[in-house]
Structures are given as C-alpha cells and as structure tokens.
Image 1 (cartoon, rainbow, N blue to C red):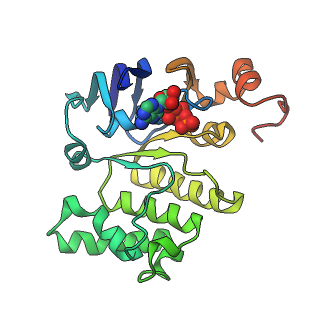
Image 2: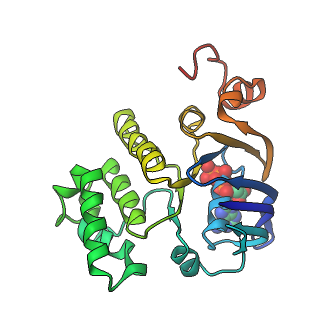
Length: 242
Ligand code: ATP
C-alpha cells in the first residue's frame, strides 16, 4: 500500500527525521513508538504533506512525496491529529461535514457515511447539534476519528489517540479502530507514547530514537525484545503485555 524510503523531515534547520524507511500493507496497522521528540509525529506530518520532507513516498507504486496536503487527502491519506483539533465552535454534525469536503456534492454518500459514523460512535449521535468544544475528551477523539472517516480514508494516520483519556474510553476507541481495520480493511499508521497499547494493537512496529528507527519487526517479537522492555517500558517486565 505504502512504501517509504529515506524519509527526512526538517523544521527550518532542525532535522527531526533522519532517513527513515518503512512499508505498510493493505489492511495492516503499523505503529511508531519511542520517547518524546524521537520524530514519530513528524513522520505523520510528512505523510500528510504538512511538514517539509525529502525521500521517496509511494502509494500503490505512485510517487506522492511532492503532493500537497489536500491532494493527499483526496488519495485517502487522512490524519487524525494529536490533541484531536476539532472545530470547537461548530457542532458535531458540522465537524463531520467538514471532514467530507472532498466528497462535497455527493449527498447520498455523505448521508450514508454519516449514518455509519453515528452507528460507530453512539455518543456522537446523541450530540449532533452540540458544539464540539463542549464535548468530553473521549467524545472529541471519537469526533476527530469520525471526521477522518468522512474523508473516505484508505490510510488513517493516528497521532496519540489515547492521550489524556480514561482507560475505558481508550479501550473503546481501540476496539473501534480494530473493527475498522478488520472489517473495512483500513490501513493504519499509529503513533503512540503508550507502547503497550501500540504493540498490542499493531501488527508491526518501528521503534524510534533521535529521528531514526533503531528497531523494527512484528509486534509479537517486539513485545519480548529486551531493548524495548528496558528502554521504553521500564522495569515492570513480567506480564507487561498481558
Ligand atoms: P512527542 O511524542 O513528544 O510528540 P515525537 O516522537 O512525536 O515526540 P516529534 O514531535 O516528531 O517527536 O519531534 C521531533 C523533533 O522535531 C523534536 O526535536 C521537536 O522538538 C522537533 N519539532 C517538532 N515540531 C517542530 C516544529 N514545528 N518546529 C520546530 N521543531 C519541531
């Protein structure tokens, strides 16, 4: 689905990502984990065309590294940003409609997809006309996800979906993500501080440090890897992933 080679991301003279390569299969979830400032979010920013980048990015063989953010959205590469970033003064419904801007004019499709989003996230359906700014953190995360789904994604880029949320809500959100991947064959690139969550959810993961990938592989293997256990998960090793 996606093949990235030698990706570099810059903010002015700061180089946040130093030549990272990875791939993503259709219907697969991969995760980037690692400490603060490792460059995880910058990878998503590069994939969605927001950050200044170098390197090769191919979607189903097509080189897309020079496309603008709106063109990448049209191709189905859609980001759910860190901190949700819903439009607080618009209603829940209006936020969703904005997510479907690339399908504007296709009323039937928008109506059908919105119904689907209401069914995935019943709390949103009960709050259609409520201002997004008045939603709880968990509801805002659902809305951010729903808004991305309205854009008809083929690849969902998720930046810290668990951040600041209660464990029960996190579980609910991850259950929905699993359903989307398994039932709709959505491909997912996940960035998570919470390595336990990420390694339980994704099929493969890339461990980052200082802008580079220092380890990658199937999550089943990484969950038992000493480097991961020591450096990223601390000392509570036994049963950490159960
Ligand atoms: P975190 O989990 O803390 O967000 P991260 O692994 O996602 O960490 P990035 O946010 O990608 O890391 O940041 C990588 C590096 O790039 C850091 O050194 C950060 O300070 C720098 N950086 C990120 N965004 C910007 C920006 N807009 N301007 C300048 N430097 C930035």
